[in-house]
Image (cartoon, rainbow, N blue to C red; front, side):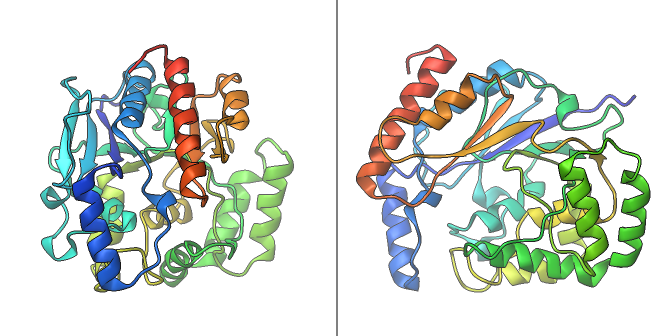
Length: 333
């Protein structure tokens, strides 16, 4: 058994910041892009609630890196804990990419954060820790990343599907699917059979190339070595991100490329699907009944994904989300 450190990385945008909003609107108008608000909604109150969850339920983390841009006002954040470290985009992202409002760019460079441990867990700020976790939820005692490997062909239901397809094009160019197919069958044929496992085995036998893995919408365990093996050794992937746009585009790849790379090469330890956390979506209005119901089930992590809705519905939804999480964590902020 190895003795190793594990960090948490969480990119964050304070959409309530006037300075950030002015910069966002300037580049949005300059590039004439149509960008949904749901990708940027957050507040210092919500991040403080996230930090309470991390303090209570992820005591194993050596450091928590909060990734922000230089326009972020930190005065409303409770970041006195010595574990918490603020890191700015320009400390690890090449200057030619900045400023950026593209989460793919930010997340593809996180492995270059100064002082980041070899092993880290990449969070989104909508993934809240809601029950006790351990380091072994993300890495084996010998340091191998733990992941779910449920095969599921990528859908084409949203613009982000382009990014997933770009990731898969790279994987199919680099790895022999037939060899993967045979090795996967040998690894999983004697595993506990359930509907998901059977479906995965069926997909693997039916398909002739990599078509995707199911996204659990939970934090992902990574190593810096994994990133170097993809982005570091294939520098043109970074160039694909550098297309002149400050926002997501159809040519993007994402951090999930690193996850796909390790799944295709069997560089992971498997866990059952949805055993780490669950996914739900914001509901318009003040009720948020789905979130309340899930919180009662004592899950370790809950992803509360934002969706397109009117500004007034979003305002009410976030009032409700803040109230529910404040009550859950047992503190008034």
